[in-house]
Amino acid sequence: MSNSYSSTYSSTYTVADVEKVIRSIKADLIMIASSTRAMTEDKARSYAHDIELLAKNEYLSKVDVTLISSQGSEIKALKYIFQSENASGGERPGGVMWPYTPSGRVRIILSYTEKYRNESEKSSKLVLENNWVSTTESTTHSTLSNSGGRGYSSNGYGVNRSDYS
Image (cartoon, rainbow, N blue to C red; front, side, top):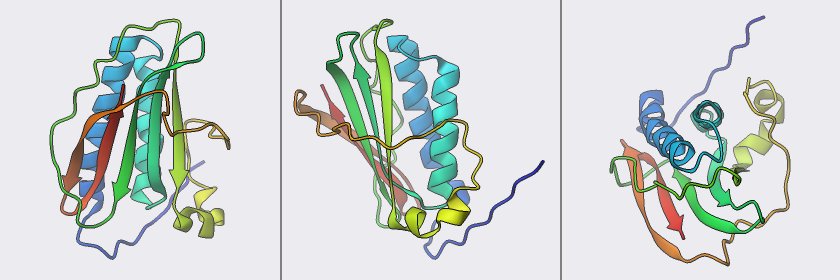
């Protein structure tokens, strides 16, 4: 069985620009998996696949990634804010060699755009690798401090990453 979808962009960026930005996010997720051992690198790639598919359709506004200890406390976090125009940055991925926490877990929460909700029939047909469910978990990271960040962009499309520790 084969699924297909199409998307139209009214900005100056292309699908290749989205792919370039998502490659940096994917590299971050793999580094987090490698350093923490709280998720596998294959799972990190699977999350990146879904993020890329949703981003190509302009369905993501934010992605929140949090390392949680076995006791349930936040250790590190980062938040990607997606921008479809005037994005700046382009730094290489990195700065996410998080602490070794094999008994912990990595939580990823996606925040969707209005377009995602308005195109529910189309968005429900995307072939995602993960089962994303609604949550009421907080992404304020109130127990952590903002510790910097970086931006990834290509032709005006990009993400701003905020880091918390």
